Image 1 (tube, rainbow over the protein chains, first blue to last red):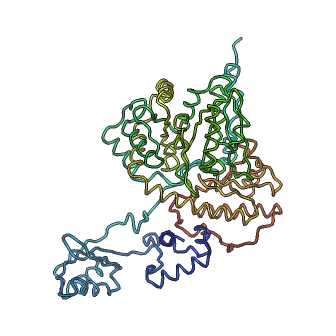
Image 2 (image 1 turned 135 degrees about the vertical axis):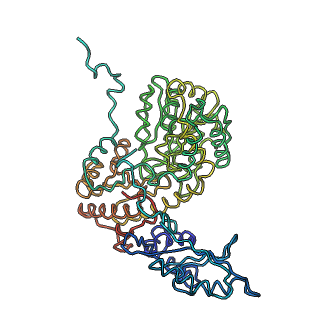
Image 3 (image 1 turned 90 degrees about the vertical axis):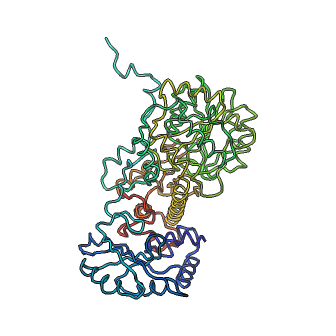
Length: 161
Length: 418
């Protein structure tokens, strides 16, 4: 069985059952179960998620990208500060970047005030953080490979040659 | 007294029955809430980079005629693609003609070759346009029926047995529409031998070549001695999800391509430049997108095949294209009755097998170019009908919900759902 294809299927739709995947990949269900278990155990599969359009659900959320510049530390480089930032539940993702700043930190909160407060009191005050630049997200057009909003319709005729 | 329009119309055209698919299309159009497995085109929209390249070409002012043969750069790209994929070398300057879809390429090839009364061998079931196009060109169709027991594959023996002094052409289409059958290299070599022995020209419509799931596609022109007697037809519709762009091409001997080009220049002039620009982008950067679509079709193929066998319908394993051709005789219905009943009682559209010739009777064509959600729902409905007709399902090896339910949301395909 092609593990990459299995991962691709699950990344696209985590609700697929091992039985369904087995039919699609033309393999044994037990084989799929074993592969998934192994991928979960060795942390290749980290989590099963649902991508929600919160705006449509009527829930207001505010998210921001924070550019963070930090002073690298001896032996651990950027890791210690990055891991520390990662632990805050408001922080959705932390990535070490090349270029003008060091960390790209995505934050989610209920209001702009909440996000600003978090940046000012928590993030900016961490030892080793030199500066932060906050960019609030105004609108999401595409997220995790999915175009948000109305997708493309099937415009094909009902029967064609 | 003046003649009626009917009397004025060329009797060849007047007496030609409309496509069986068209008739069924009208019935489907009148029914609401139908899930269609009757669609012979990808459910993917043309990949964005191809659409974007077309938009960019318009912005740069590419709005004029191209040479009759098509953009030279596109012909070079086609030549490179065929050389890389099959090791067949065509001179882009003289041996390739860009056409308005493979349909036009076929029409040109037949008109350039067929003389009144020439016989054209066509394996059946066959794509609905083949026989009428031969008749319009003045030829006589000699069908070579194939059945499920032979995997819908043509044999060299069949070709040999059908040859008469008037036989001029053999028209192949593998992977096949509507059966999904693929001819293996060995069989093609045997057929090639017969073609050479009887000096037959082979027109090979390889529009589904990249959509081959089991084994590898054999390009007819790549077989020893066949390039000289083959007219290779292909296009972008199926592999790159570009049906509406209408770009195809024909490759063959320079003298013959010149003859086709003559008809082309007096009738069509050239394929639209915007579509040619898009096709060029498809060839340059479209491989990974195409491979992604092929993987997705293959998964659906497995799902569909599994479901037919579970519901008790014998189904030959389609190895290419995106059609399954299950046998529905066990339901006691004819192809048309089955398709009509399925449409009326379960609102699922499939195409009756006899639309593809008499040997398609007893079968229906189901396209799996539909989202997994739609396929799942359509197959559940079809299984209901089959059960009602008294067919005992095979021992169910799948759970009751074999595919993502319609309400599951985003399909694994990411494709459009109607």
